[in-house]
Image (cartoon, rainbow, N blue to C red; front, side):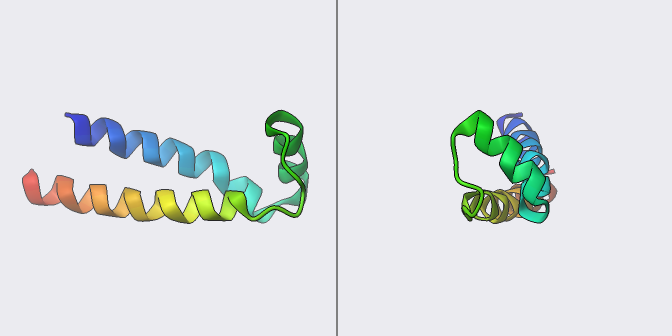
Length: 65
């Protein structure tokens, strides 16, 4: 059950960060909220980290059933 919760949390974070990896306007809006610069790569790092966690958790869920 905990793995499923982590899986959905990783998915939600990934979906939240995905627009910021593509659009500058979204990075600007997130920058106002989180006080980050527009040229930051932090959203890319978070997105890729959560994508890896998402895939690993998915594989664990498939193995354990």
